[in-house]
Image (cartoon, rainbow, N blue to C red; front, side, top):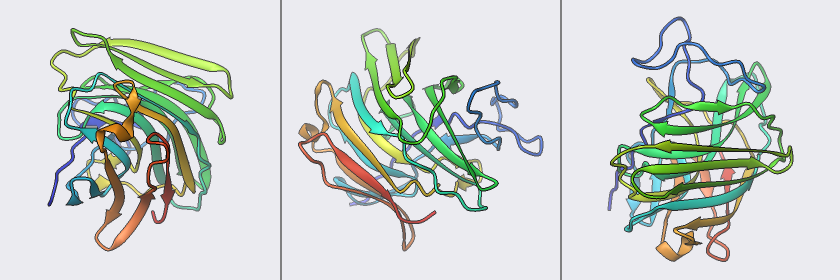
Length: 255
C-alpha cells in the first residue's frame, strides 16, 4: 500500500543564496552562536512514500510517526550526532513534532548538523508553520544530550521546549496556532529540502533516540510507522526496531 507524507514546515536553515529566496521567506539569517549554512529556503518536506502503512519509505524522513489518534503531546531525548564532513555541502536535522504527516500544520523543535567547506555546523531551532523558523542561540556540540517536548494545551496553544542538558541551557516557547490538525506525532532524522528538492544528507553516523512518547505513552503503543529514508534504489538512512516501545536509532547510509 502506498502512502503520502507531507511536512510543510520550513527548516531553521532558511536563507537566500544568489539573492533568491522563496516567497515569504526571510532573506537574511539572524546573528547566532551557531549560524546555519546560508542557502535557499529549506524545509521539512517528506515526499511520497512507498511501502506499507507501518513500514514506509520517504525520500527525506527516517524515524517513527504515529497516526490514528488526536495527538496533543510528543517527547523524546537524543544525543547530538557528529557530522562527518567532506568537501560536499550537506544537511541533517533531528526533531520531534506534532502534525506534518499528511497535514498542513507542523509544530516542531530539534537540532541540526550541516556541513560546509568540510566543517560541521551545529545549531538548534523551533518551528510553528506557517510562521518563520527560529534558531535558538545556545551552543550545540556533538555528543550533547537533548530532551524535548511539544505540547498542545487547548485552543491552539502550544508549548515547545528544547533543553541541551550537556551545555546547560533550556528554551521554552509558547505559541498559538489555530486549527492545527493534531493528527500525528513523530520523532525524526531528516534530510531538509529546498525549492529544488531534497538536499544531500550529512553523514551523521547513528542518531540515538530515547524516551519517545506520544500523549504520555510510549510511542510504540500507537503502532507507529517505521520509516526508511531512501530514493530509488538508494537507501539513505535506516530505522531500527523500537526497544521498550520508546527507544530506537537511525543510521546514515548514503548522502
